[in-house]
Length: 264
Image 1 (cartoon, rainbow, N blue to C red):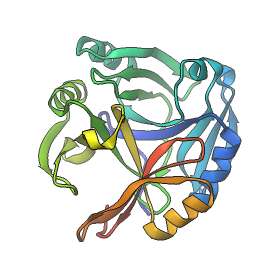
Image 2 (image 1 turned 90 degrees about the vertical axis):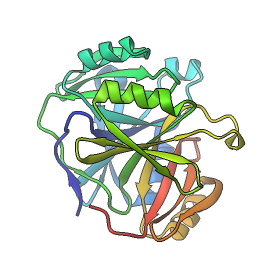
Image 3 (image 1 turned 30 degrees about the horizontal axis):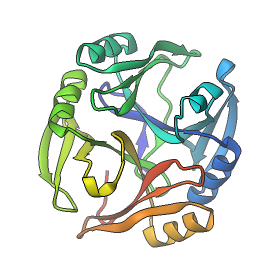
């Protein structure tokens, strides 16, 4: 069982779904991944759903408010990266050219967060934990496993995130032959990055969220039976992994990946 119990600054620490139909999304993901759900009061934000697997938390979800809907914000998975100070990290992001979508604010007693849009347009949440870190189940079938920046200017994005979070990087050839940037936070893998290609269509810069599955073909069949769809073909990485870009019935995009080699 792979667990995440500490939020090292510069590491991704949480993902959650913003959706137009929280009840439908809760049913969809519970059936797809075998999650159990618990609704929790979230003050003025209404209800926040925590998802669990094997008794450990895996992610969250909430219904978008009227302001988000009126601004045309689509259903989406959001990525959170841990920082020592949400206020200082947001200020630094602004110095580096980011837009502050939400200045730092307290999330009840559990943490403090800010939401930024990087210079290319990808949105990221900065999370400063205040209480003891919650143990999460990760890198297991049905669990979150990876975060990947898909952007229009990888050179500029690399400079931005390395300056903001202290990451290092290296470039390799990815599954489709294009350059793939791997970020590290110290000695640990932090995230990936690739450049949006013209043939993808009007894909905006964003942080993509990956979920592991044990059998990709069976998971895709289940997803489609539940009303989700696959975008493009399944991609094969020889002797390493198979993955597919998909979306839920409300339109939230994510990636299903079946690892063919063990992961820690």
